[in-house]
View (cartoon, rainbow, N blue to C red):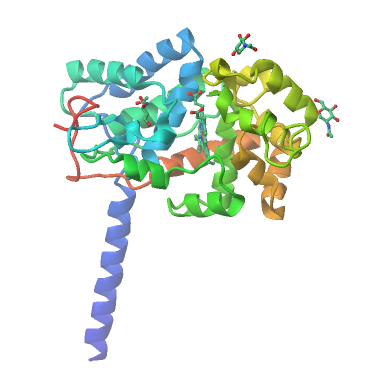
Length: 329
Ligand code: HEM
Ligand SMILES: *[C@@H]1O[C@H](CO)[C@@H](O)[C@H](O)[C@H]1NC(C)=O
Ligand SMILES: *[C@@H]1O[C@H](CO)[C@@H](O)[C@H](O)[C@H]1NC(C)=O
Ligand SMILES: CC(=O)N[C@H]1CO[C@H](CO)[C@@H](O)[C@@H]1O
């Protein structure tokens, strides 16, 4: 009886170890080394050219990967077109300024020529984000590969899974926790807002018609910041869709940790950025980034990106390798 018990315990442990090994082996940096040896370099080549032509593309590609991973996992569902019967993620309001679809299509076209039916769109998204940020001198990180592509994309899921720019600290923490990301990951990944653009209408409600304020501006905001944004965004309809940098330092062109100093100085556009210093634990994390060398933020950002890139991935025989990134096979 004892022998029987211990052998089944051993069997259980053995299976657990085997399972852990398989789970670990699901994604690997060398996934395409035999099936598509030049594939990783081909993606880098397309992305390097696109970002050198226009640095804005780095922000677009980073955000695309984030929006992909937060809805149904990193399965390239963000790239699928709506169909007659269902509205896709890309047609949901939170996506409004998603950029970079054509760069992904270009990379996919190159790969379909050299290794047809082999390289997933979700791996292209993950690599493109990494390569794009590297071109602009930002953090670097590893991209284990082997993701497969999903076949479902629903606008309703984008609306319910993506964080809102009006989120509170606890709202952001719980949103990221649902994706297996910690409070630290959330604070560090928010630093992506060091680059990229938004539009005037994201900030006008806070600088002209803030409820209950004397001069129309949200009293939380630094008044120099308010004056600067009023200059960029006149209070009229035609400025609503004018692009402005999310992070004022260096026009959102440089990937650096200045974003955190701006958040700390009440110079951020989104309430969700303000939220980072609204609790003592968030404030401590922001101050730590401000006071530490930038290299520390870069390495934390890289690790958090690698973690984000593993959210809900499809592997093995799950999903498919799409031939065209905007359509399931
Ligand atoms: C913490 C919760 C987050 C919220 C509430 C949020 C919200 C937003 C909003 C509202 C915009 C402007 C979109 C527009 O103007 O239409 C934006 C832009 C952007 N977000 Fe986030 N975001 C969050 C986290 C992240 C993360 C984790 C990343 C990447 C790792 C990211 C990367 C970006 C980038 C790069 C842009 C600029 C895109 C461009 O210039 O095309 N964001 N975000
Ligand atoms: C607002 O920012 C300016 C510099 O941009 C600074 O001189 C000023 O002290 C800040 N105001 C407050 C109340 O912190
Ligand atoms: C409205 O805003 C645009 C810039 O977005 C500006 O060029 C124009 O002069 C503004 N019009 C008025 C009447 O202020
Ligand atoms: C880039 C993109 O596909 N944007 C779409 C996002 O969703 C809105 C509707 O909410 C569409 O109008 C945009 O074209």
